[in-house]
Length: 125
Image (cartoon, rainbow, N blue to C red; front, top):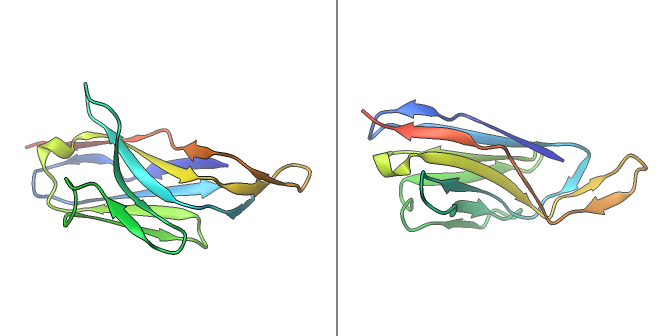
């Protein structure tokens, strides 16, 4: 299972960006999917996550501005970010919690989690 994120970039304060993260491989199911971020000099923090049934969870700092969603058929999670602030500047990492997939021997395999390589979001005028 591999995760690939896209959609990062430079945006002015008050602007919007939409991040996407697609999981590839012979996936059977994924429990939670979500996004963390890490700003320079700070610890990685949870931004938002979403269960396979659609239950969402947000960091207080992004509530009302960010919306997480997922397409289970495409094994893809999205993060719509509106009203962006300079303090949202960070590398954003997507993850898939407990993915189950078929290995080369057509056996179901479960792993703890998988992470994408990160995408940089810069909010600046």
